[in-house]
Structures are given as C-alpha cells and as structure tokens.
Length: 255
Ligand SMILES: [Zn+2]
Image 1 (cartoon, rainbow, N blue to C red):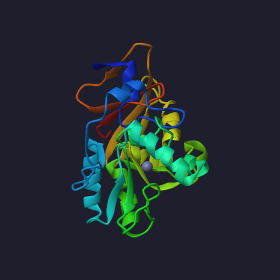
Image 2 (image 1 turned 90 degrees about the vertical axis):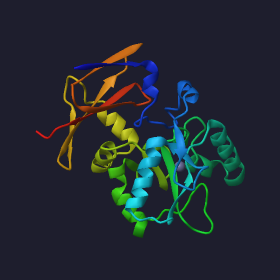
Image 3 (image 1 turned 45 degrees about the vertical axis):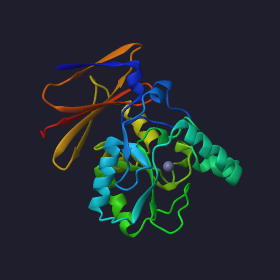
C-alpha cells in the first residue's frame, strides 16, 4: 500500500470540485491559478487548464469539427467574472443575470475546467451562444463523456444547480466520472452527494466500462491532514470535492 497525505487545502482543487453559489472558490485557489493554455489552436485568448484543453482538442478532432464548433468563453479571473456580472445586470437586468451568469467567486469559469462552446456563426451571443442538439453538435454530445466532459446545466436540473439550462456550457470532470454521471443522469451536485455514501473501508462504487473496472469512493477530510491508502501498482486519481473531502478513483484490472 502507498500512503498519500493530503492537506485541508487539497479539498479545494482537482477535476471534481463542485463550484456553485453554495460552494464558491476558496481563497487558496485564488492564489494557485490553474496551469492555463489556449483552449484550442488559434484561440490564444480563451484559456483552459492544460488537460481540459488537450481533451477538448481531441474531442473536436474526433467529431471532425473543422472550425464549426468554436470556444466562446473559457477561464475567467474573478475580476473578469465580476465585470461580466455587473455589465449583464445593466444590460440584461437582474432576473436574466441570475439565471445565466454565475455570481463572482462562484463561477466554474474561474476554475479553468469549464468552456462555453458555440456554433460558428457570424454573430455570436457571448452569454448564450448557440449550441444545438442536432448534427455535429449532437455527435459532440454523444462522445463528450468519453473525453471527460458533461453538459453542466441540464434541463430539469435547474432547481439543483441554481442555473438555467445552458446547452453551451461544458465542464470537464474527467473520465470515468463523466460516463458515470451520464449513466445515472446526475448533475455534479447530485454526483458529489451520491459518492459520499461510498467509503474506503465500506462499499465502494464500482463502474465497468469498455472492459475496465473503476472503483470510486469518498474520504472525508480530517481537520489538518488526511491519509489515504492506495494499493500498489494501480493507477489512481484523487480530487477534492470543494465541499468536505476527497474523491478517490482507482483504475483496477477486470475481475
Ligand atoms: Zn459557461
């Protein structure tokens, strides 16, 4: 076994962090900006976390986008989110803004893990770009989970996410989590809640996909440091949930 020691601050980073009005970005994250790179070649001003950008590039290549799907908005600093929010209040009013623009400090765009995508039209609505459910856009949605992306604000989940249906906003959570969420039709709030029932020593969540097994479980963060035991010689990933603990994912061999 390998012992992995985590600190309280680690709760607030990783690909599975839940960021919403109840769970804003913590101060520690503000000082540790994600490693940002251009979201796509030729889009140098629209940035994403490194792995997210690589996955998006692969996915767009797979669906043969050839410029038909373009990034509209990626990483935003807190100041940029603040300006967007204030500008939208003036231009669109409070009701629209609260439905479609996350409160500053509570936006997934501040994590570098979220991207607004749009159909490549002459005029693009920056807050609500067109991203249909047909043609190449449907193809993109079919394959998105395999590349770690979920449509974050789905129809029917508005009461839980607090954000209106946004067909254009995709969030990277990584594989296999995007596939598990798709399988159960969970939004991220529901998924994080669901995983809290699975623990290191109790029942673990087992997911089988494409001949591989994945074990997923939750570990509550201790006051100072949390130690997680990982079996030798297996691939694993640990992410904070931005709430109260960690999600451990283990790539195990088929039984
Ligand atoms: Zn967005």
